[in-house]
Every structure is written in C-alpha cells, then in structure tokens.
Image (cartoon, rainbow, N blue to C red; front, side, top):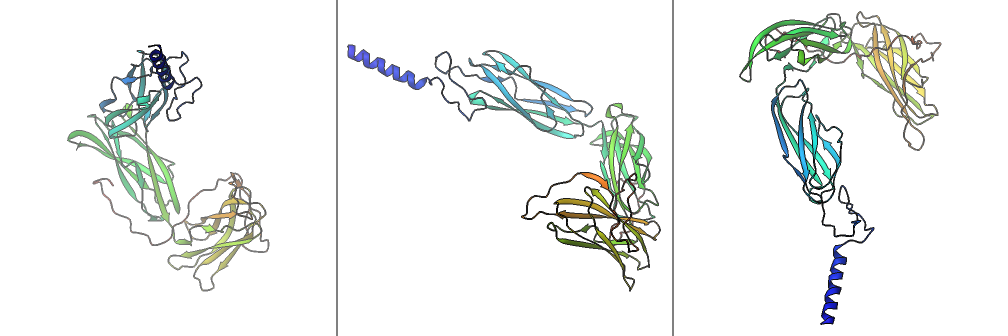
Length: 420
C-alpha cells in the first residue's frame, strides 16, 4: 500500500513539473507580449481575455466638415493582467494616447477612435488593429464605416491645360456644388495672378444623386501673352458655406513658342573623376525663320559650381543653332544641376532656360554624394568667345520653365456648357 502511494506521489510531482514552467523560462517570441514565469509559483492558468462590446461601428451618413469619434469599450474577462500594446490605424483614423495600458481581471477600458472625413467622399471603411498579450487574441481588428456627404464638391480638383501657342488663350470650367438653397461661390482667385485669371460664370440649380443642389461654374483661363514655358498656380475658392472653409485648386499649363529645343534638357552623362564630358542642345525655329542667339548664361542650381565651356555654333545653312557644353570632371564626386539660359531676338522668347544635369562618379563605382541646393555663379570660361557665360545676379531668382517641342494642337473652342 505504501509503495502504491509513493508511486502516485511521484507521478503527481512529475505532472506538476510538466505543467508549471520553471523560474526564468524563456518567453514565447511569437506573442506581442511574451508571458514570463509565474512569480507566485502557481500554474500559468491566469491568462487575460479581452472582450470588446462591439467590433464594428458605422457612423452612417456624415459631412466632411469635422472629425467624428467613437469609443470601443472592452473588458478583461480573464484572471491575468491584460496589456494593450501598439494600436495601428489606416489612413484617416487616429487613436489618442491611451491613459492606461494594463487592466486587471474584470477591469474595463476604452479605445477612442477619431476619424477625419475631410477631402473624402462616399463610402469609407477603416480598420484599427490592437495588439494585446491575450494568447487567443494577440491582434484584434476593429472596423469603422462612414458614408461621407461633402458639404461642397469641386470637380475637377486639378486642371491641366493642353499645350498652347504663345499669344493665345485657353479656358477650363470647374463646377463647385453645395447642398444649401442659397449656395454660391463668393471668390475665385489665382495665385500668382500674372499667368492665370478667374471669373465666376454663373450659379444654377442642379439635381445630383436625385437631390436638388446649387452649383457655381468657375472659369479659369490662361492670360494672353503668358510667357513661353510651363506654368503652375493655385486657385483659392471661397463659398458661403462657412463650414467648408477655403478650398484649393491646382492649375498647370504649358505655352509653346516658335523656338524648339532638342532635347528639352542637356545630360552631360556620368563621367568618372578626371574624365572629359560633353553635351549639346539644338535650337530651331518651327517656321524656319532666321533668329539669333544673343548670349548664354550657365547657372548652377546645386553647389558646388562646376567650370564648363559653352560654345554656340550657328548652322551655315540656317537650320538652327547648336549649343555645346563641355568640361573635365574634377576630383570630387558630385551631382550637379544647373540651367543654360539663352538670350534670343525672338519676340516673346527673349529668354529660354534649358536644364543641365551632370553626375561625376568616383573611381571604383562608389555612391555619389548628394549635394545641397544653393544658387551659385559660374565664372566665364571662354574669354575669347562672343558667347561667354555671364555672372548670375545673386539677388534674382531663377524662374523655371522650358519651351516645349513638337506640333501644337489647335485650341478647343468652349462655351458655357458642360464643364471640362
């Protein structure tokens, strides 16, 4: 009998040893919060158990004027200590810092979710992932939904005009729609205002999504006489819907000149330190008319400046003018960005800017460092040439814009009908 009791005691002891991890046992690396040893010496049966009241919330139809919030409430139904770790959200959602991250058995908490509906429209679904030390639910996914009804809709939100010949104009229409009976656009202003102009064409009643609404039509046009090159602007639009606030509309256009630049930029290649490099660009008149390159100015946009020679070669047959840039790579690897500024006698195209790029690589193919941006002066490198580079005025900013090349499509005629 004593022998039987002894065997039973040994088996029970062995079972306890298998069930209870020893002090200092390694944590499970697969858990967000690895569970360590039980300091009380008891069996590790006291796990946390997180339970949310709801896993999904639908805000329904909301406007885009202000953020909305919802509290996801949870309770630790287990006996072990519950720990909340990372809370990850998708775009548009935020979770404020949690006041507490640890909860004993039967304790409850809240994860507040804030959703910003601005610049969004229609049905939206966002997820929130909560990491915990609950073995059965190490990652809990919560969901919020909303059907966003913007107070004001602008269509389109960016206007890109097709290329147009210099001296001509082009207009595009933008609609701004609101839900109130007296809705209207009160201001439309282009910034800067030297290239584009705006006007409010009309405000009318419309039916959208089977709902009566009000709509203002705004015309954005390129001013006649806009200089050759690519232009960008921002149009500020204000309405009498106070909650909507200020709205921004991007605009871009390209004005094509008589002079064609081929290629549109000069690449001087990727020479090794100490090696020679060169590149060229050809300037032609689309109507084959005679023109003159009156001067050149090679300017650096990134530092340090790099000495280069500029040579202008007019075609004896009048087929255009070729401008060559050449030099010898120094001993310092770098990435150079500059622009070749050409002065011409063509009306409206007195100044033409061509981007210039050069990368000097070290011996052995090591990475080329990126240099900072600061306008620099390029000293004259051909004292004997009639076309030498001229010093840049340090106080004058270098405007952007490169003339386009190729045929020009005829501008489209537009009336006051449907907006583009």
